[in-house]
View 1 (cartoon, rainbow, N blue to C red):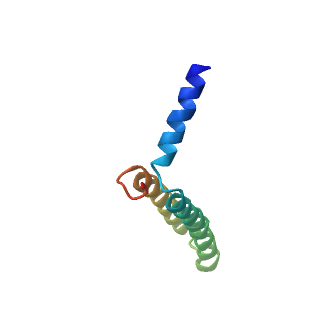
View 2 (cartoon, one colour; view 1 turned 90 degrees about the vertical axis):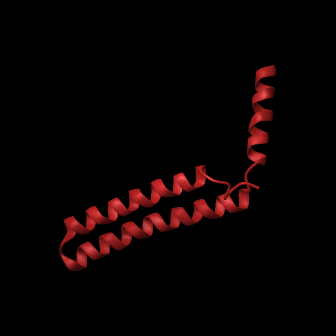
View 3 (cartoon, helix red, strand yellow; view 1 turned 135 degrees about the horizontal axis):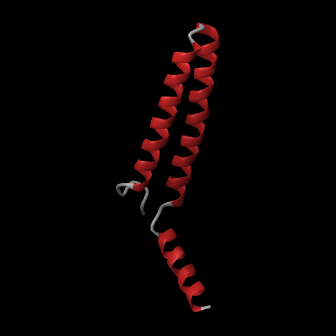
Length: 81
């Protein structure tokens, strides 16, 4: 019982450190950018007929943006209050 209460208090304190509006806006933009990259890559693969290279480039770009977004969120004080 005591450990559950302590855990709840610790989670609440950790949650208070971050600006929820900035965090949700950043994650929302990230979730919009990622599918757009895949759609553009798929469209270009259909139009230009060099699908393998474009698919590889779009997936590498997708992974790079995803990893850099996670690193940006976890480092620095950009999303803290």
